[in-house]
Image 1 (tube, helix red, strand yellow):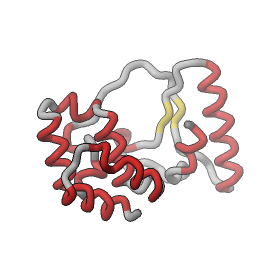
Image 2 (cartoon, one colour):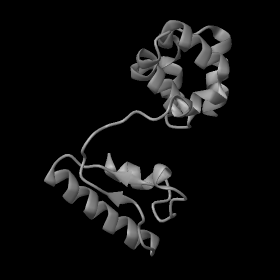
Image 3 (spheres, one colour):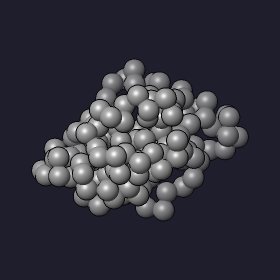
Length: 137
């Protein structure tokens, strides 16, 4: 997972605030060693210093509501339908289906994965089409 993390964003870009920094929070010594090794590899590949912080995990805090399922905000019909399925905000955030749709809307996935799973999300045809467009697949 950490190797994907370093490939999915620019780990050399300085954060404009602590809140929006790039960071990994390993829970074990082994995870820390892997993260540090991958950071060194990323630095060599980028020929630049990695600004991603690697800090011991202490606690998990959910982001503010306006950050939740951020990519789905570009597909308001999809988010509205999921919100009606999961009226409790915690249930919405915790839903694997909503998380999966958010990843698709963010461009993570393939056309085949989208095609195979779209009907299983419980969305109307209009919302499915909006998710397809947001996913650019």
